[in-house]
Image (tube, rainbow, N blue to C red):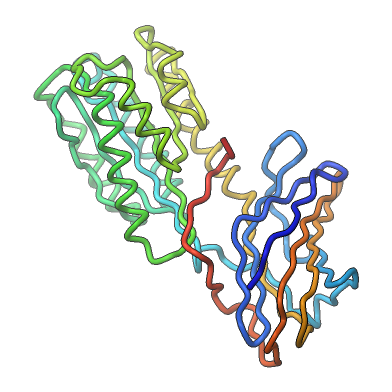
Length: 324
């Protein structure tokens, strides 16, 4: 068993936040953690050599421990659901071309390391499925191509109901995942407020509060109630004043998701300990800042023949791009 006993605050500018840990025989220890600056900015691009590992205050040789950064896909999955407003004010206003172009660029970036699904809504009670969960960019392109000739059937805006339904879909995706560490991100695009009144705003906000999801909102035009959309997009909110700004708004959200994702590291190493309880300390050393975390682990039964690339056995749980 590996038990967290302390996460040190930012020391010299960095903060390491342990999210998941795993101890397996023969002597594998894996840590999934984030690295941020003191003011919460993500720190990406670190390599295995950027970290120093100590056991009981003694530096462990990286050659002896075989420390490595694993591809997070062995234990982590990130589901992104893009929710598009196809009410009459969008489909009849000439905004569709810019929307489809922006959505295509956004989803192409997301499918490189994430599973993407795309749904739309108008005034009807049910969502409009465009792309089922996939990491195949061609499948996403085909689904979005359907929008070029789309005609709305109910010009009203069931924004609240669509958000609730999207949360439920993301919940199902994450529950069905094989990987134990799961991230869910909802990106909502709309040019207005809820007009259908099928679901009260309070119920919609309650569904968001109860879900461990990252939620971004993109608002278009003057009808947008910024205060309401910023409550939906509690992870991030971007407002596009005109159709020509839609691409930049989607790009801003994509950059935020990518930057936040890069702060996560899956560090694995082979412990030289063979018995007893020990204190593990991991230090990040980069130009302009250092930081560390400490924890206790039990090396009972440890032996040789450790492979640091072995997938860790994390407990099932969720991770947020940004802590609330």
